[in-house]
Image (cartoon, rainbow, N blue to C red; front, side, top):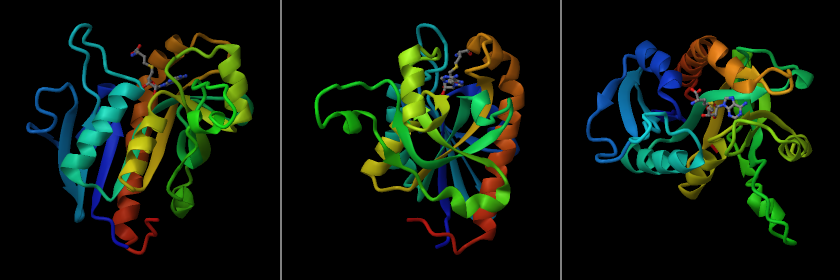
Length: 243
Ligand code: SAH
């Protein structure tokens, strides 16, 4: 099936800027009126492109990272743009021991999980971990990106318990929005996947926030290049399987 409407959900402005520039997207002033979320739209070879960011916190002016804002962004984006595919593009921590390097770009593989939702009641554990399926990114193999299970939590640090759960769940990328975007997309039955660039290596022993800031530019440049390749792939492959 031919894809002609794609929406990117991006948490931070710094993550979105290179892509907005590369695609010459224009701000949609009617997106999320009165709310911090922002939308941009444009077009690439017949594909209508939208990009939504979580926006800024009014009190602190910081980007609204995390699942709460991502949930709202995704719902607003789905209502307004009616995409056929939702892509959560952003940065993430990777694991040296699993072969990640700074600047690597990953496509989500198999499912997206939560590593810090703990409900220790029989039958509730799997539910709280999310386990949201992702669209079959194997169809994008020719782009030569890496593949990994994305694991979402509400914190930048990684206490031992979270690390254990990430390993048990097979997580290869640690970030703060994907499972929320996956959940809302699943409610609307819209196919979803992630593209994540590695800003930090969570098992390197270095402070994550320092690595994150040092590598943000490199990672977001790689991220925007990968997003462009993905869009070009969709434009050139009309027979892609959406489900
Ligand atoms: N706003 C802060 C840092 C934000 S880092 C600053 O600029 O200093 C958190 C953001 O990057 C989240 O949106 C998350 O999805 C992603 N991220 C990158 N590396 C991460 C990691 N190791 N753990 C969790 N989230 C990470």
